[in-house]
Image (cartoon, rainbow, N blue to C red; front, side, top):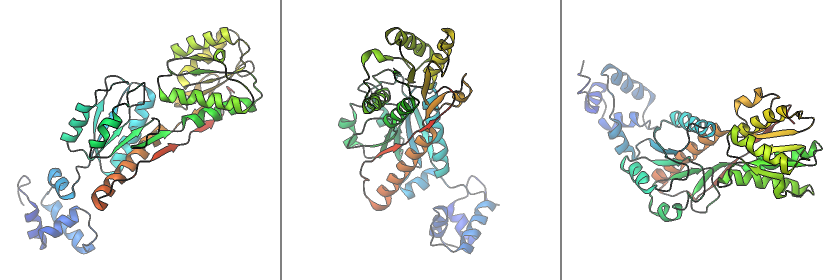
Length: 342
């Protein structure tokens, strides 16, 4: 038996009675090899414990089979769910991941990060950190010189880049329309921090639904939160003070909605009799709130999976067809899950 550390593609070819090129075709899953030859070559590889060099394969295929992933806030539910989808789809397609977590959501010092990914020869990058304040200003300056595909998640449409996002506007509009159909006349809103693009989209969806129903979303009818239960409670108590007639509230995420349910109980407001509540995100725990929370479910696992599939497709077009795919704006529709809180 050949020494494991010294077995080469030539040893496999010699013992299998085929050329080195045939062994290479088997390794690359080429179709121009007969089933009989493919089985014999793979059997010899097993016998010789032959393990092809990943570096050599990447050179021959013009691919490293590595993606770079940029994320932020992995301690939060949303980013971790998205990363789970990215990881599972990359594994399914045979890609490894190089992960970088930004020190803060609004980090703009990205040039060294992009250079680091390029030095590690990644085939493409998924930018999974959300759009906050002006943390996308660099796209117009740096993207034209970046010769590898980049997919962005959760940001406003831009003509020169591909983006995959949840339709936050539609999800919020559907949530508010649900409350209107339930006969609620005074529908408030607790938003996320408005320097987040997602929070602004959800607030706009609430405003649009009210306007289309002949209602007006005034300043006294909403209050900003910070995505946390503690921030949600503060915003809810503020909203009650300036909008005491409120009989329903659309809350920007499920974690803030939890504090609304608890605070309502504390002040004697029955849910949903006195106050209907709808959240956004569809986290697993929302089903077990008291009462169970009506929420807009955004499939962040699917968000990650779609981004990986799109990136892999763009890479294949670049290598095989020598073309750059036109930028796309891909929206994933959320789903309203109706429970007892509304």
